[in-house]
Amino acid sequence: MGLRDRLAAEIAAGGPISVAQYMTACLHDPRFGYYATRPALGAGGDFVTAPLVSQMFGELVGVWIAAAWEMLARPAPFRLVEMGPGDGTLMGDILKTLRHAPGALEAADVWLVETSAPLIALQSGRLAGRVRWTRTLGEVPDGAPLLLVANELLDCLPARQFVRTAIGWAEQVVGLDADGELAFGLASTPVAGLLPDAAPGQVFEQSAAQAALGAALGARIAADGGAALLIDYGRAEPGFGDTLQALWRHRKVDPLESPGEADLTVHADFPAVMAAARGQGAEAAIQTQQAFLSRLGIGARAEALVRAAPGRSGVIGRQLTRLIGADEMGELFKACAIHSPGWAPPAFEDVEDEAA
Ligand SMILES: C[S@@+](CC[C@H](N)C(=O)[O-])C[C@H]1O[C@@H](n2cnc3c(N)ncnc32)[C@H](O)[C@@H]1O
Image (cartoon, rainbow, N blue to C red; front, top):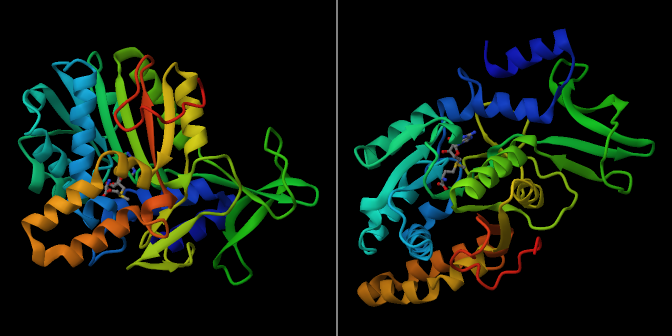
């Protein structure tokens, strides 16, 4: 029995499940979940992330970490953590870049937080001997400043969806249609509790897991000092919209079509993540990926790469456009910094902190 049949049997016996429960099963079921069985990053896989578009992305994140470490007065040790490190490319480029910041690599106690066994195997191939692994942030030892990076992690944390009907909010759920196929529906009990005002038809997404990560990062950073850099596609302001999306071999497919076989995501809810972090005593700020990478000098880095390999100027130009172009990743993707009070991390110095 595959995941679709198992979910159908569970729904037939116990009733519809929330979109968050469906996402958790599709992504993390230990036997059939996407990340447990077949995470496929890269051109030949299901999706391409920024570190795989170009080495420039990881190098600039490395520059951000080196500069933040300097601003924090070069703590030794500090915890250098990546959550959801994929195939290990980003951490590889970060470590390569940190070689140019004397003392930083020696001071870095490097941890990868990862839940996917196949991806841990890929990461080991690139990074074994230089990093340690945990399944949760809580297992990374505290007591030293934290510099943490997570690219495209928030979007794979599960979210519930609510739909405003003529008589109030109802939860969008996954149930069965008359033929026994998985189908979206609305739970018949209207939702009690605080949801924003909206016109009928609007969809509101709420991710307890994203907010919990914001709170955990905020608490850790308020206690130990440091900063977390969360980069993802998502909203910078609270808003509405159904952002559930399934990607299979670079194509959008029906999220209910093949549970466990496609990557399933929602937009990062940065306002909720930042509010949770602020609630724990940290500060938070956000800007577009375009602004963030431009402030770190991606234009100059691209020029230097072209000077070193003029024959690759077309490729490098296309990579640059992919990363910062307004119609590509530049505006949809945001860079959010959660940081300890009293300083602003590199490239966030003049970004307004709405909590201030
Ligand atoms: C979309 S991939 C991004 C990979 C990489 N950061 C990149 O940019 O190429 C999501 C990553 O998050 C990991 N992941 C998913 N849920 C996680 C969780 N709850 N805790 C830690 N890692 C998780 C996945 O296994 C994968 O490594």
